[in-house]
Length: 364
Image 1 (cartoon, rainbow, N blue to C red):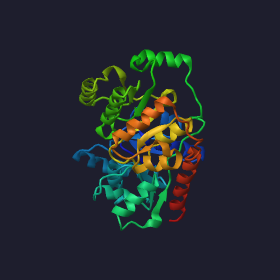
Image 2: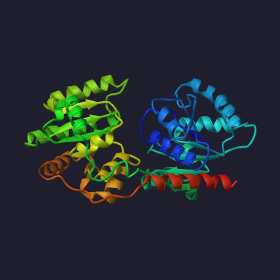
Image 3: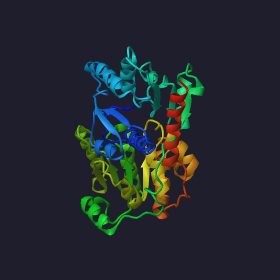
Image 4: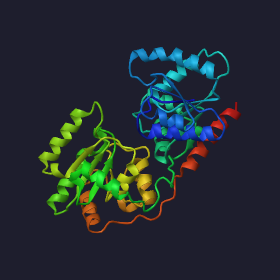
């Protein structure tokens, strides 16, 4: 039984579905508890069963879900409860107190470099703690010294190389529809920054990059893919105003999340990863490199770790906009070709996670 706040979009949600798929294929029940969202049909198509409980809602009323989750666990009797987020992990801890019937093993995953606090520490208390990168493992050991290092398992996020084949190109029909939707990108090379509508993703730095390139004669545009989301309208308006102030409003496209990110990345000059806060992993780095698309990003956290292993040319010292611009300008003249990148397979990630489940189940 995997627990997370919702099934809308993002790396946590994608990993949840991928593990549900692996469980189902192996003949296990794959139960998922969340507030629901647009990815529920995809979960169900992968063989998972969804139960709707708002266990990630940041409100005092969320404590009501303790009793509902306890009843659900008593009815479903899972062998393992896997908490993938802090608040659901707390709800699970309370729900397991006073549980009638067999107590499931508890696994947690640290998906991000969360603020160091007693609240965040709940994700370090699983019988096994999955870390999505070596960067996350170091973060846990540094800030939570009471954690047993033997309980930690580094399982890096995996991708299906068949879904991101090297050299993939979008169809002419796709290209025509895409550029009709985003005329600012048509007829010039363009960078894409995939990410939600939050300041931490580095959208302002991406706009500054395009402005610096234009000042130096670089003919380039920018797609902020995923920034348009409900509730983020004010932030997008700020970005539009900043693009206009920098004189690049005609070279920037703003877009909501879309399922065909493979085509988007494949058609771009390069993928940008400019998060101001270190990322725990950086799935889009592995996806882009699998496609043979270069990635340009700050050399810190999981993104720096991945670039160091797969494409060092794309790593730039954090916040060094001059170096970032210089690298991008060189790529406009000659787009680099990353070496074949075959690490981080989906099969390996799924197998390693199911092995952790078997380990805690059989060790009881």
